[in-house]
Image (cartoon, rainbow, N blue to C red; front, side, top):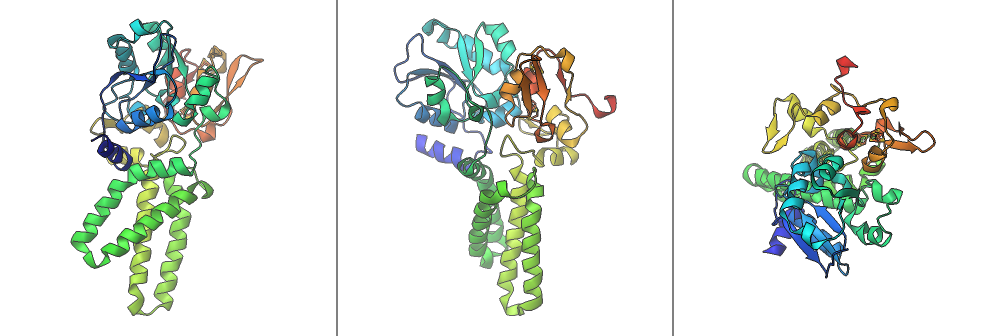
Length: 363
Ligand code: SF4
Ligand code: SF4
């Protein structure tokens, strides 16, 4: 059953895959062992248990409706309330004699660290972005180097995220071909899979920040192949053209979905759905959210340096390194605004009000 859930979590990440919330033991934890907080997405918990093998720690699994950390915190399902209630309802306070929680930094758009501290008395430390870095992070006494703070989206992460998000689309396409163009089903299965791997492995090298922008160059290349083949190949070679058309459609589908896959990419899907009047699907809201408004451009990220209290939170939680910190001034610096992906983490964590997202017409 657990293996089936792991496969489901790998291939159908768009859908919830819950595991029981509550406090878990990793190894043989003692009262001074670290307390790590995570969501109750089955695959995430399995990964953490694997990465922490050989260590002693407490793992506080919070209810995120079975959704992964990034998606659940973006949709505010993995939020301050779920963290606070997990601390209060589990027996962690009686088993541990320190009061430090280690949170995944990708939960920062959902969990307000200062509010957790206020409501529970536990301080919040941000852990490394990647679970694989946890042993090094713990061995280093909680020190995070720059690589532990930022998302990289290397080929393994791309493949992992893309497999989970796109497999349902791949399956849906297979069903459509089975029903409508059965004679092309095998072509579809091969071409769609090949396009998928080629596009995702190459995507960091393709210019553009958004998925659809990145799809432009492959579409132009494929369009050129299509036109050339129409001009030069006889009609008997039409399967070549249908293969190219399949590849073009799949690049488009992958391009649209790509934006939502990684914390360092902006989503086209959310604003597009909001513009189409789709307010929400299930618990995931699109229309009217600050993130969508920032992506559409109805709101802007605004920073007021004199209000900054120098807490460094924005610098610590931004997954793409938009913020720098100027120690001599004791202030944050909005250093790479163009890299912002509107994740809201800095907005949620900034307690001073120095970071805001006002409506454009009020700026
Ligand atoms: S801008 Fe806000 S979050 Fe960033 S250092 Fe200043 S007070 Fe802290
Ligand atoms: S600057 Fe943009 S990407 Fe960075 S934390 Fe803030 S909203 Fe997220």
